[in-house]
View 1: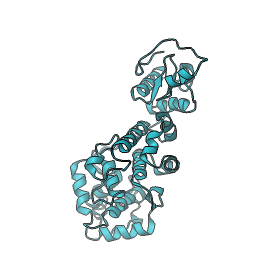
View 2: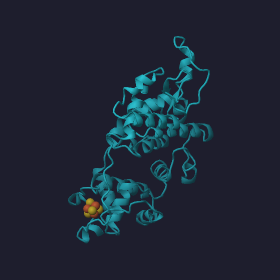
View 3: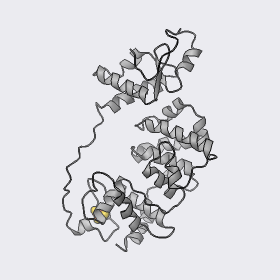
Length: 314
Ligand code: SF4
């Protein structure tokens, strides 16, 4: 395994993707934003959203000063919009408690809203060049193949993953670059379904050496999107993102007509997650745009003096 560092670094120098969050001058905050966005969304969709985001809100305080609704609008079609809410909360904490500077150590990063084990390590490594193992799905798969000779990583992550990557990391300042190169190999060459071993820079790979033994794990079904509650939530949020003022229940209902129970469930979950709110007059709005809009809207008299938010009523 001794050659893996120079082989991987040389390959990365020659062929890395030009991703905007890897360019010189990108701040730790902007790297943190990229990590939030990349958690569950492909690079191609994140890139334009990230560029627009950091141009509009280059610092934590700028993001914190934005309204929750504007943040949700800017999140657009990236999916899993709870991440946007958590990113907004994270910006607020960094602006208020850390002088607008993203903390650099993993322990402090882990205390921030929305920052889990992977994101904390990624920010410490990529933004502050700390020598910490960074383990995502791609890295786990590469290590399973190169080190353990298995087609796939175990179904769930474990402390062993960190120990495995720690063993591979160079001891010097090259560790962060090695980490991103390992991730790049998993994303572009050692892919889940069709590894391109002919293009692989590594001359030692246990899985290849053993003749590519089949996976013993049960085949995981690809997660579908069409027809899921996630899709319904996205449709409902689209309606609200496209309106500056609260909308009626009827306006939301037409966004999903095929399953009314599913639509109710999705709407209720958006209320519970705090991504949307219900106004005193029974309409719906993005978080923070509810009753303030009603107060400013003299054309629609309120039907009730107040109503709890996370309790869906028709
Ligand atoms: S030889 Fe193939 S399986 Fe092994 S690390 Fe390279 S791409 Fe992945």
